Amino acid sequence: MKELTLDAALEGPFSVRFTPTGGRLSYYTLVNNRYLPVESVDAFLRFKRHGQGRAELTTRTYAGQLKLFADWCADRDISIEKGVGQFSHFVAWLRITPIARVGRGHGNLRTQATCRGILIAVGELVTWATELGYADDQLLKKLKREETSPQLYGTQYRARTHIHRAPGDSNELTKWATQDEYWAMVKAVNSERDRFLLIVMYELGLRIDGALGLHISDMHLSKTPPKGCDYRHGHHIHLIQRENKENSARAKAPEGSNYRLPVEEDSVTEQYHIMRAERDKALERAGKESSYVFVNIRGGIIGEAMLYNNAYKMFKAAAKNAGITRDLSPHSFRHSFGYNHRSEERPIVMRLMGHKSEASTDRYSDVDEKQMREAVDRVPSPLNPQLKKKKP
Ligand SMILES: [Zn+2]
Image (tube, rainbow, N blue to C red; front, side, top):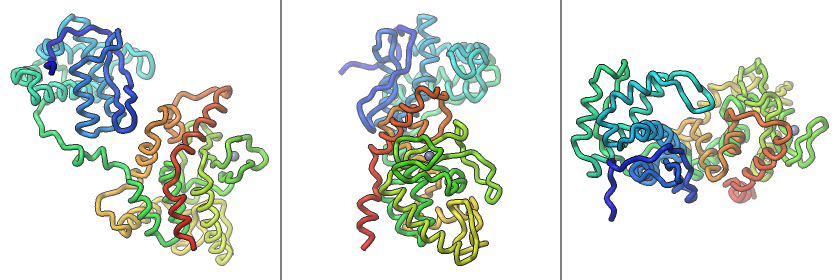
């Protein structure tokens, strides 16, 4: 077996590349200008992804951080090992050199937090290499000595050895709710409203705020959209940023008022109608009307928009009643959504999750929405067979 070494000469410049090996094995790595991976960094990133079970995107962050150090070393014609020996110079360079990468922050100095992240990444690489015997013990000591150098310009950095966690212990792996947990919670709630809330959080990846901000008029759950809506890819909902005076819920819609999410008919639409029957009956009995989808049907003032705190408590209670002992937060459903769509291209997932992305021009928005629809269709809802089974 070939010995890994941190002492190989580096040939830059480097770029971060995605290695699509599929599912849980995909990770980002660092390649040189001939598209060859930087062996030591590549092995480290594989360890992060496969050994520690860290997320694909985590390896992307690491790769980007390590790229800076590798570039710096290559510019000086030195190995990573030599670079560590001159670590304080790298730290100084990092703090006084404006960001060269085109994009956000271009031309600005890096923040203290950004620098810290980069230094920690290099520290982890060295720690890992030392523990596995790819680097001399002295290297870690060197790194620690450099840490106390006056050239650090106020950046505190501590390299320390640590025990590597086995994949099973990793929080990263269990940050999202599993399908079984989701299903158990859906069964554990005792109103159709709460069930539908869990469904839109898990299946659409909505935050509580996004869900509670939904109005009946946002739900275009039919094959042909209502008049005035030009969406052409089936059932969908609109995420609209507006003042929701009753519960001050705010949808984070990055592209203003025309942000549309495709939904699955068999799970979302079906449960929506079940929920509506319960909701409308409660409103009628109380002699109330509401434009909100989620309203109080038993407690509080009947017909008023559901409040964030109540949704949060409902989530926690559902997890408890489902027998889930670990600490699941509402956000874990959003993580599940990201996880379930992990094999999709990043821009599509970003749009589905309402993350800020480059605004697409009108010309391309149709393509985007078609891709979003296809992405949603590729992940069948776990509820489809289950809900059917539940009903007599
Ligand atoms: Zn519509």
